[in-house]
Length: 159
Length: 289
Image (cartoon, rainbow over all chains, first blue to last red; front, side, top):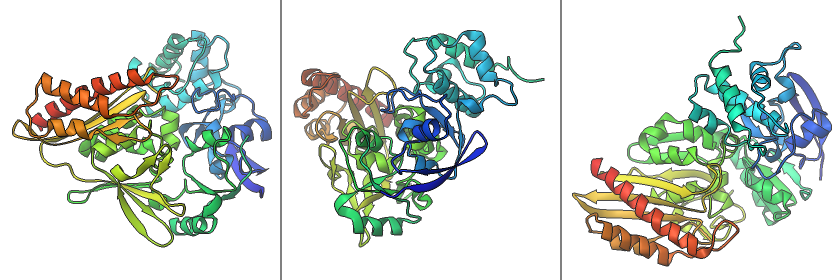
């Protein structure tokens, strides 16, 4: 096994990693870069707790090799806050109490962000489809859907 | 724990195929890896060499021409197919299938070629493509060949791919006039694989069934045609009794395996219900085509 040198830009910062090629993206982010917001959940591409955004697309960090993100832009939950201010979707989650235990939240926020960036005026049904890849084991889906709806309705738009 | 491997990221398909020829005795090819990485982590697949073809842009395309039909390159993601206006217009059933394939995250990264090569009988694309009479173009460093999807699946997680071959392209012919294809699966969560799935393509001549292809997913070790059910339908006109007879034939000829999700008996029952439903739906759509 030969280690590889890769460059991944996470939340706008470029990281140079020297890794075993079997390293998963979620391991690179959590264990090498030290950003532990993204969670390791099922590790079978089911639960969505590890969801991050690669080049605008929500993906599950447990099912992508870090090698495959070489040279790409990755956003994690830590990258949602800008200049000390929470993003719209984070504020909405707080206002709606869109979490109980919180384990799914970082992945849910990333799916919500990618979905709303692509589809700014969704129906409730589309929102539910948009988070189909994220499981909230506390079953707090209604508040999550409300939070996403309120962002879509422009409640958190900056003046 | 994933077995250690040597990682290769070839820049061209040609380079990938020559690497594969060199390492074929102990090698896996990864594209989106949405299925492969799971079985690698579970230790079911251990390989010394891994060739990553995810970035082969030359295999990332969707083309259509009115004689050749549809051509989808192997590294095209599910999401690209799902969002393609071209696919939606010409082969709407592929878009509705993709819409229900796993989750957005998986569709964003997973690819059509990887899905087919993985050989999972519960995969969504294969039964639809089988109903559409598709073929798979595969290639090695020596040659390319086109395999009808009917012959592509050999056994459980086993395809007709030789050790030195990769999937290059999916080819879907232009449907005959008065043809419609429908697909549905039965599952509990929309992002789950089907407990069973059925794809049916019906071609009409007047009111009679001129040609039909019925493909069953997760109802045997591989995706399979329900040929006895098809024979019953040929030349007939639509009736509830006919659907019942065809559904029963599919029920009898499938060979499902029981697992945690469903017993063999329940799967056969579902195959019957969904065969009736999909044939009827395709038939009705074809009559309006």
